[in-house]
Every structure is written in structure tokens, then in C-alpha cells.
Amino acid sequence: MKKLEASLPVGERLGEGFFSQLKCRLAVHKIMIQLKQFKIQHSFSRGLNQSLKHNNGKDDGFTIMESLVGMLVASLLVAAIAPMLLLSTATRLQSRRVEQGSQAGKSFIDGVRSGRIAVESSDDPPKEYIKTIDPEFKKYDPLTAKRSLEDKPEDYLITSTNMLPPISPTGLYCFQTDGVILPPNCSSDPNKRNQFYIQASRIRVEESEANDGYRLAVRVYRKDVDFSKTVVASTTTSKKTQTIVTNKLGNKQAPIIELAADVIKSNTTFLALCNRLGTKADKNCQN
Image (tube, rainbow, N blue to C red; front, top):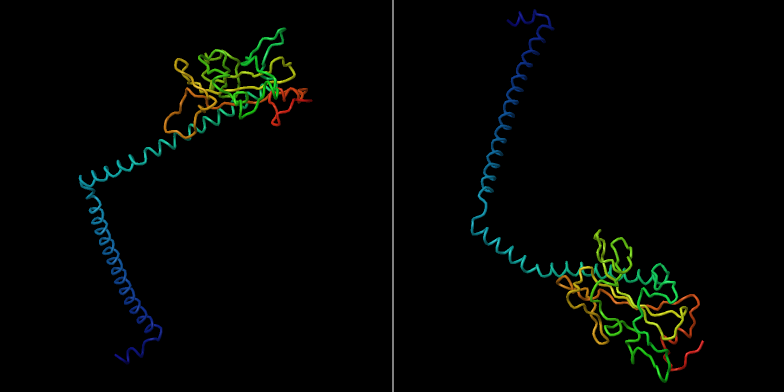
């Protein structure tokens, strides 16, 4: 046999050994692939079983008692924070309303000063669009008509005495949501644009001329004010304007803001201002 192998060519003997080794390697490789597939299937089935067990634990849910206790705790929390939420919401809305009302009053004063809102007609005698509330307002005099904020605040401030609260929308201006100010008697509002009512009056010194100027008094009321009920205004001792902090809708019968401003012309003299405002030193008014 050894002689026969020795008599074969070298290439044939190498070829047979190579193919036998190749067959062994292929068999080993096939066994390794089968082992890997087995491991993968085993791990997948184990993970699937664990996932099913985990999901089955979640499906258990809460008992009826646990649900009732949770609902009770949630109800107590809502009841505890509800007043704070109400106060916060009401205050935010009221603050916005007061801010808009203040802007409406200032816009009205600017309109009067610029002449866009007429105060009186050009007739002779002129017809007043904004009424004079104190036709007997005396000129300042240190002896007979002394005037100061401490002694006579009603000469400087808006009160329910020198300007009565309105009892109807007649004579009130309307401030609309687009910033337009309508002349009095505009309460019909077919387009639902009215936002505020504006009450305005003038305080003029007796025997004053057109160029002497005047004090303009302005109140701003909400559009939902009920004129069938008592409408209030500030007095010399009590302020009745609406407050910002509130836990309700605010007092719609009270003015949002009360403003007073002096309206002067380009040729208003210092004497005219002194006759209306007075002096601190109790001296006679001079030019």
C-alpha cells in the first residue's frame, strides 16, 4: 500500500487530503450554525415569556377601593386650589379691564385737547356738548375764595357732589373696541362694539373767556353698567372706583377710573391758571 501511494503523483495525494479537510471543516461549520440558531430561538422564547409575564402583571390594574381613594385625594386637591385659581383669573381679567378703561379715559382727554372731540359748537351763544358742572366756580382770591387741596379738595377732584353719577346712557360718550369714540346717545350699539361709557364735564371759573381753559372731569364706566340700579361715584371722603384685586366680576356699578385734567389753549395766561388752581403762598394771582 505504501508502495502504491509512493508510486502516485504528488498532486493527486495533496488533492485527496485537501478535500477531506474541507469536508471536515464544512461539517464543523454546519454544526456551529445549528448551535447559534438554537441559542437565538431559546433566548427569543425566554424573552417572550418574560414579556408576557410582565404584561400580565400590568393587566391586574387598581382595585375599586384604590380608585375611590385616588378620586377622593384628587377632589380634595381641586377643592383646595379652586379659590386661588378663581382669584387669579378674576384679578387678571379685572386688571386688564382697568388698564383698558384707563387708556379709554386718557384717549378721550387727548381728543378734547387736540380738538378732535368738540366741547361746544361755534354758534353764538355756543351750545355745550360737554356740560359745565359748576357755573359759579369762583376765581381764586386769598381772602374771599381761598383754594387748596387740603381745604377744598372738591375744587380739584371729581366727586359725586360736583359731578353726579349718571342715571342713564343719555349724554354719555361711547368708547368702542377699535378705539373710536362716538358722540353722546350712542348706547344702541347695533354692531356690539361699545366697550365703555365715558361721562365728561367741565369746571370753569366764572366770567372766564374761551382762551382761559378749564378743568375736564372724566369717569369711565363698563358697558354692562345697569342704569336701573344705583350707579356710584367717589366722594370727598370715599373712593368708589373699581379695585384690581377681586374674586368676582367686579362692581359694574362703580367707575373703572376717574380722571381730572386741565385743558389749556396756546394763549392761556398764567393768571387764568392761577384763578382756577390758586397758589400755595396765599398771594394774589398775577400775570
